[in-house]
Length: 214
Image (tube, rainbow, N blue to C red; front, side, top):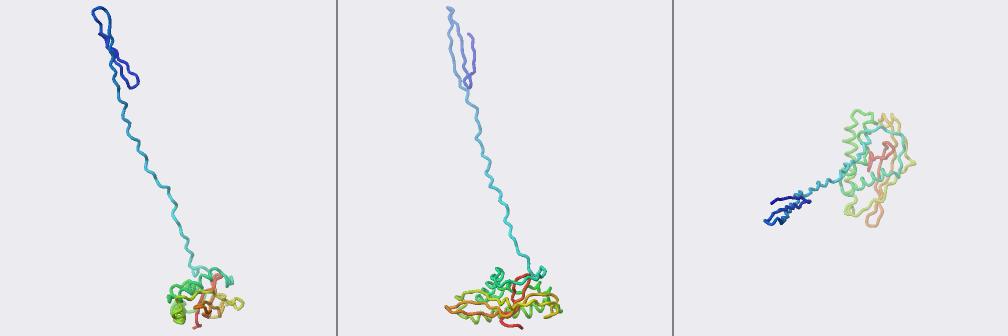
């Protein structure tokens, strides 16, 4: 008896040949299936979200840290409209800190004034007066403060003058204008608040005296 084995793909075939006494042979076969090798499941790589560039913000430099320019301010500039809005919000909310951007910057005051202690003068005289006037204007609106609406700011540009060093205790120069007005409506009636004096810095108007010069 003899045996033979064949492999076809994953199937193994075994043949067994046996002989009998009369010389004949019988062939028996056995088929064995070899299981396919186990393939581990494919693992997907984790999805990595795209990297976004960090958001950057641009902050305007303090104008008082920059040098003066001779540019004459416009009564229709976007910056003046921002100042008028800030001043108005301070008045109706009775919060003078809101109007800080509309006030002449300390750094600029240090550059233009030739006095012994300009910072003290700025804080104790000018800013103190500004705060006092904002509270007074809020009180003047009274119950109408919650509904009063800003109309705009009028600046008599034709009356603006260029103030040179040596005048008003100055060592620097600026444009100055008197008599600007903050216009508003309240309960259907028009009203206005005076802005006694504004001076320029780098081509924009800033308040230095609100109700009166003192």
